[in-house]
Length: 224
Ligand SMILES: *Cc1c(COP(=O)(O)O)cnc(C)c1O
Image 1 (spheres, rainbow, N blue to C red):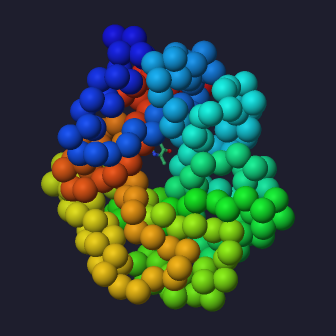
Image 2 (cartoon, rainbow, N blue to C red):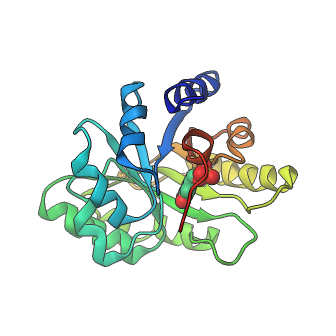
Image 3 (cartoon, rainbow, N blue to C red):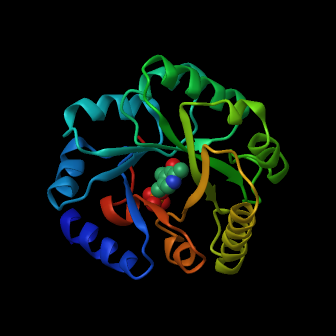
């Protein structure tokens, strides 16, 4: 099946959940991104800043670029001029830097707070405790150029669907609980970014509003 057909099919499978597809293009050439663009798709995700910076100028201006991977503070200034949504805010220091760079160019930046829900040690993300500390921090309250739109999480990489489902349910619970609490003015719990090629169907059933799908659309990645 062509990229165009896969994009259309994947979008269709999301409709009844009212969720958005972020097409993850990492390691894939600009030509494939263009194919998806021509199928009408506008939301694309990259996990590495350098690759994002390489691709963005080669592609149309009306693309919504999502940064889904770990963001180093020294790279924030390169993405704030054009990024649509940063999914991977996982520390107070990073949030502070995003606000600082966003303020310089007077462009508010949409962010999600990444929460650690997987069993693996290696994945990035805030613990539940640090999430609450960040939400209650002066840093966030004073971040005039940061808009927090919700949460992001990655499940454990496993074939065990029940474990994956539990982890997504856990994040959804945190999300729903936060909605009920009083939050800073620049925080709104609207978006829940969870689900990738292997688990987005489970994520949708558990309340995801944004899925980040790469290989199911563009094929396997070749890292060599
Ligand atoms: C690569 C990546 C995805 C998409 O992964 P696929 O398995 O190719 O769908 C989603 N989220 C993040 C953070 C990623 O790095």
